[in-house]
Length: 258
Image 1 (cartoon, rainbow, N blue to C red):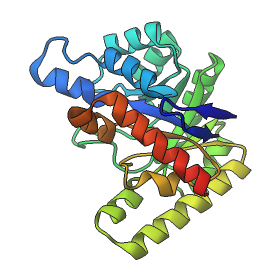
Image 2: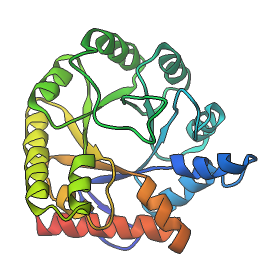
Image 3: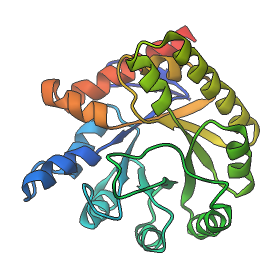
Image 4: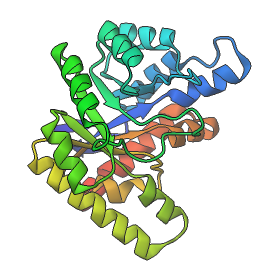
């Protein structure tokens, strides 16, 4: 399928999900209702986002329960709910029935999600969570490292999607570690190929910027990138619509060059 972006670029087989968590972070720093994550979601969609991602954390440090209810009630594009695999979050997901739930690791002391989900260590519990969510029609994604064992286990547990963690690649790129970048891209490429062969839909995300997105967007097995913090940061300087449109243009350029 070929989609046309707001800039007129064509993007074949690659979607952009925009994470609006950090609009809520700014709101919560002072309290009140401004800036509104739902308004940001609408603007991101106008700019070309295919879907909206929001992470409802156990500590509610950014997105709130009411944000999830409003997003589900008003969005015109799919809602991807990032969440820990806890009873509380499963109950919330079953109440709102988002398009997809991405199960992520979560620790109170972390600044952001660090690393992929421990699928091997929590396989029994995760299988039950996946079954509950899928029974209501929710697509289930696991946020994982591009590790063959983890990918194969994710497929066996019944996940629909794996989202490959791109954080290590982005860190190597930021450090100008050319050899490290090459290793991480090879790992992501091999993981994406294996995941697709296992029948999983392949997404990727974490830490992607204008400077790092193209190499990941060139991987043909990947059908969705989820990007948040960088786009919200760029929106401060040039607006969210422009930030989303520019990211989409880079993704389209990468697909043409692949």
